[in-house]
Image 1 (spheres, rainbow, N blue to C red):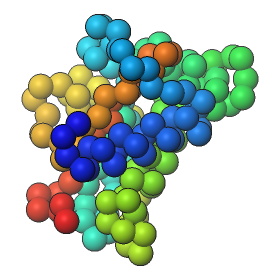
Image 2 (image 1 turned 90 degrees about the vertical axis):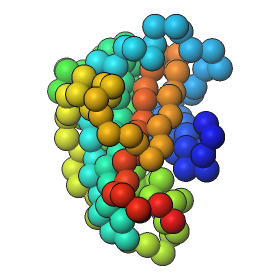
Image 3 (image 1 turned 120 degrees about the vertical axis):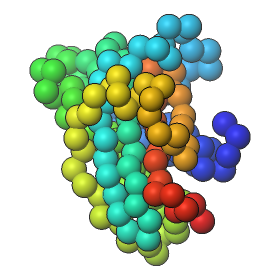
Image 4 (image 1 turned 45 degrees about the vertical axis):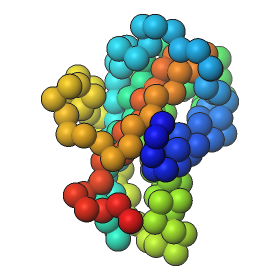
Length: 153
């Protein structure tokens, strides 16, 4: 991570995965994890600047994420797993924006939407303002923050 924005996004995402899902990053990712995005959600926001945050997750992360968030051993249905991923994306977005823009700024955050992980996270996507990779014991997550052109402070 080279930019201040990526450091802020990494710190926020790590904190949220820890607090909501009891998951911590591991120092050494599995070689296959970074290509293993199976599901993704997008959260759009507007305020002093506009953009969207995308959270992608590996297939093996989804059941553990949902089970941890539900407080149950059962992984929940595929819909509940995507809902859990959307909630994590929403909370990451809601926590990183004040870090970037200042706590006095107000943003409107849309509800998370499931998006096509191949299109969103593939090589043909726009360049994000920040991108972080989170290898976790239970799988892998990727967080991308897209800002409207010229939005960085």
